[in-house]
Image (cartoon, rainbow, N blue to C red):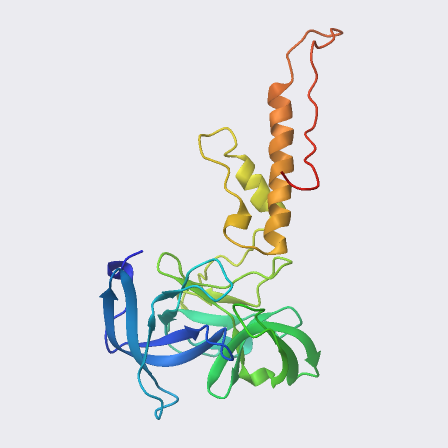
Length: 270
């Protein structure tokens, strides 16, 4: 990805993510004052809109959290308007895109929590009645990993943004979403609201086993337990496919002259 691919310009209002200790996983409203390319490193200079007394800040466009392995885009466009379904149906006009929360907040929902003019990314881990809840911030090194109690009115759905796909609602571990993105209110043809489960993703991957593509592991993209489990499931399916391919075609009643034996890796993984 190069600077040409990024749809940002000087003077634009954006959200900026921080990996500074004490603010890891937090999003700030900022205005881009300058963008430079120093020795192949994209940098931006911005000012904090909600903290006018703070000096201009200068940071990399792409950063890797300390202790992490993946470089991440540190800014994105202004968060789109978001509503609960009861509010959405009464809206006039056609604003796009819109983020529509399916129903009341519940445990497991991936959210951003507004506190001190900053949005902190996390997950609802407990509901305290209808108006408040407990939010666990993203684990280190991408977040602070602490649990706080907050008001539900200060929540918004957590969103991912990329140059290629725009805004997307991430799935929970069990394949659920707390919101949908509507591209046009008049037609309500929102972005597909379904999540692929690990089994579905494994099935999709096996369709390419016979091709020339190399084995790409989910753990290459994420070091989470879920990614490792998906890799194991995919490898099992691939082994079953290979067993079927390697099974000799012999006549009825004939005994094969060789047999397939499952490979059992050692506990050391080597």
